[in-house]
Length: 312
Image 1 (cartoon, rainbow, N blue to C red):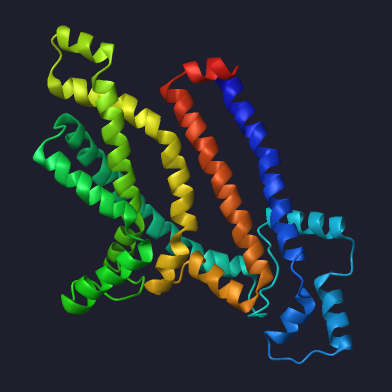
Image 2 (cartoon, rainbow, N blue to C red; image 1 turned 45 degrees about the vertical axis):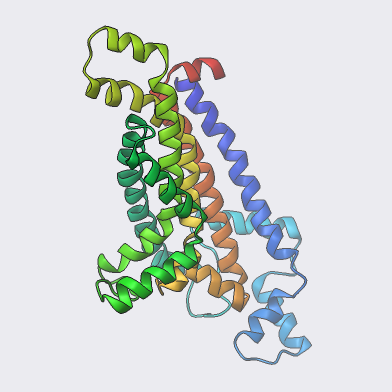
């Protein structure tokens, strides 16, 4: 098992390096001159001399690979450069200010996903084709089809404006995260209810469940100790990807609910052409993607050690 985990970690390293290279290349392939952009966003009409000085200041006159390795080395030390929009603040400071809001939003959403989808998915499988199961499948269909931004506007209109149960915006209290977290997690809740229901139904029809019934195990034990364990195991890979999508997909929700998260920061950076912020965002999302996949592989390895033996 240790060899398998070490192997997965070693595979992850070149992936992260590849992501850093892509993130750096994407910005450098943009037709506009970053030096000119840095001057114009600060309401300066640049002359050729100004652009030349700014290119020297930003190190844009150096060879491409030298700039890449310099940026990579600094990024490893959490130094992503200076924001073009706000030259008084470092990009690392902007990320440190906004990332906790996004992680809190994604964390509450993840709790909602697991806390709602697992019990409902199990209940739908146990009560297959019942009234509850059919109603749930209808709700799941609409929950998967409704876009996040539309659901956000509906929730704001009903629960914030009409009923005044939740604040319209802000991250000052836990209540301010309830509506955006539910809007962000609804499609995932619907997907996982359907996934867990399908996996549970398949598992409950397998031979080892029949033998468990013959041995006289209680229905509760069969469902939670045998069927649910196998169903959750098969859903772990999808869950790992969902964590990445939750964090990366917050930019729509954060802008609707005016939450000062990293997603909103990225949208502002795109419109303001703040390239260092965009680079840092791509890099962090890539590292999160690789890290979550690595974590899922390790958890799968501990749940089912046969995976490690197969890979070995």
